[in-house]
Length: 436
Image (cartoon, rainbow, N blue to C red; front, side, top):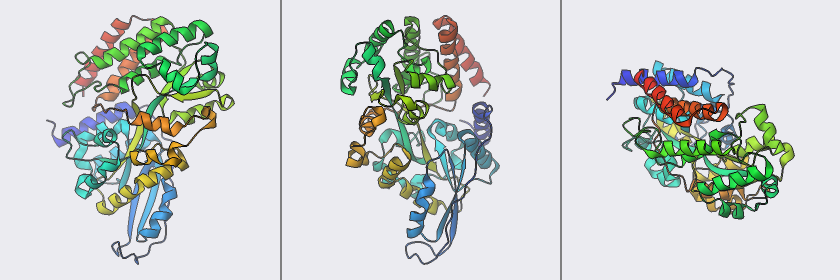
């Protein structure tokens, strides 16, 4: 077991590896209201809470409504980009001062805070057990300690994975384009490989944009990833990651995988032009597609991935232990992330809810998107969300994932030997873990 000091130093090193390449371009915004001590349901004390967020979750739009029922509580929101937010948060909790009362934690970072558990308030001590049933089991458990006794945060949105596909490319290949028919055609990953060969042979286009999203899809469907819950590296013993890697390299050898770098201008152009057939990605990717491919409206559609779904993205709201107002902070979090307010966030900002009770709401189930060929997008995402099985990631996840990604890139872009690249990647991971 690590000592507390060793744990904190360990997490600092992890964050340096993850965030060193990131630049600072965050912005601050404040939202406050006049205070009033007339509310019979709250303390007469006027309280100010600071909340740190990243991106644009739109939580500022809820502050006025909260103020109406809690007039003595003022919430001030400060926003930064993803990397700076988490870097600033860890700096503050490590220093013992400067942390907010409420903070967002992105799902990909949650495991890196487990070694600094004492820096957060256990939300179970504030009554979070009472709302546990409102949330999907897998996203809730992802914010618990390994023994399940400590809760770091309440889930906000999630990112269930689906298959976006070009109807015009499928039609050119002589394949069905209706979502249900496409899903019936591609029920297994063997089916996906078969259809991929057919698409490429008949259209000359790759089945998918790059190898990353193929690998991520299988990785995120797996019940295990790189580490067990004791943080032992298991990729040479557990079959799941190696199977995902082998499948991805098989598709490379089949010649059905593109070499379009994610987040590049070329990637956006290819989405617009229909230069590849499928994009295997989370629910929030719909905004990336529509933003990059405005001329492709009606040419994209959505169906389920073969053999289930994974999750990519989502966040939590937690309470750093430096706060003097833990109960008030939790009261706001539990109100903001209630099923009713998550439905509002979905309608206003497109944040996909982690509260399954609203998946049956007609405003949700009947939500369609003409850009994606009139598909009931929310219904598909909700069905995917309920198929996700959680897998432990561990503090060394970023290291392992980066090195496997390097191996796949070498195979895809430089035609290197898959087995040799795998062996070299494992060695690099082991060396870096030894230096932690």
